Amino acid sequence: MPAFGQVDAAVVKAMQQAIVEAADTSSRTIGFIVWRTKQILADRKDAVAVEMPSRATLYRLFDKLAVGTHATGSARTRRSINARPSGPFGEVPANAPGELMQIASTPLDVRVRLDDGIAEKVELTAMVDIATRSITAAVLRPTTKAADASALLARSVTPEAMRPGWSDALLMSRSVLPYRRLPTLDERLEHTAARPVIVPETIVCDHRKVFISNNFRASCRYLGINLQPAHKATPTDKGTIEKTLGSVATLFAQFVVGYTGSTTNRRGRKLEDGPLWSLPELQNLLDEWIVVVWQTRPHDALRDPDAPRRAFSPNEKYAALVESCGYVPVPLNGEDYIELLPERWQAINAYGIRIKHRTYDDRELNPLRRQHSGVTEKKGLWEIHHDPYDVSRIWVRDRRRTRWITVFWKHLHRVGVPFGEMAWDHACEQVPGGTEEQIADARRSPAATSPRRPRSGEGPSGQGLPARPTRRRPHPGHHYRPADSRPVCRRGNA
Image (tube, rainbow, N blue to C red; front, side):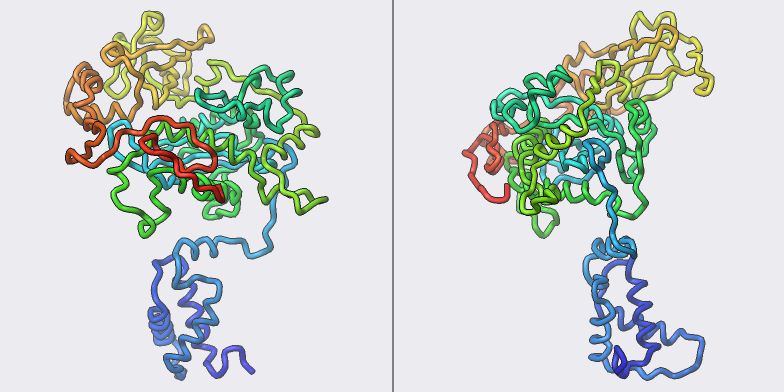
């Protein structure tokens, strides 16, 4: 008996074509697929008449042909299915910490209160080690930049320092990590938190600009890291980091005040009017959660082949692998961090260096003013490194004396507090066409750069908004709430 009963083979072929065409388009109903099938049959060049089945038969035919394709379901799922390789899945083995790591960014489903007073979602950029499933570094930013990706590299090879308010139970000396041996190899590990320090050998990334930028590539070259971009539209090339970021949303984000849900139909009401964490506060919570929960939680991918019922935690797996693979420290000094910052090439003029209406100058630039840098391929311009999250200073490479010159912003004294490019752009909008001094004064005045932060009991219209959150050390099983109310204990998957 034919697989599709009495249905003409031409009808089957036409519907298969209609389903394939729907792979990259917006999701539609079965009725559209049936209509498109009839259109394909009508456009055929041969004049052979085809008997069209009944509507019910066509719907049953669709049910058979569309199995596993999500033809009328989620467009994202449909694209993901089509991007899968046709053969059996393979996996690149990683037998040592840092041998293979993956990096990616994703929006975090939590609203935070930014410096300008606006409640917005932020992006989470994280790096995971394949051999141990350790999250070696994670940063939250309003928009991920190349400097953030470079900062992840620095944080991965740098021990996690204990923060004020953290419990002594978070110390590396209290964990399963081989603390007695590691500090003898790396003095930086003395009195640090229980997070492994892993030096990447190969990093797999996607094709986002921040990861394939010249700055990130230069940072990888400087640290001797092999950067391996994944195949385009192939999420399976970095499935571990994608699943890890999803786990962060499940195990961490939903317990944080300001959680928005993954889609609009899961979102609550008036989240921006309630108490929200600031970006530094949420970053501190995330760093603590990684040490307390993620690194100590048994991971299903870290099972012992000899005892498959037992799942190791990332810290336990790291401790086991370090015994056989060893540990080589890569201490970074101040100049190493400067090397990881974004670079730009500019002339050093009589007035100094100007970047986005800010003037940087110092007497150490005197021998370099209006001089050729010696870098012919850059037309004699000078190499300058800058931090997009702290515009108070820049660094100029003096190749003649093999050193970095720190140059401060001329009007830093008018502000007194470090700030980033986003705050500067906001101040420029407040004073259109203004001078550098006027923009600096606008940045100094809170009323000119951001809405007044409501006081306790005062909302956007003068009522209803509780006080701004203050720091409270969270318990790994608590619902992360600002300190205007007691934490709600919700023990479970967290």
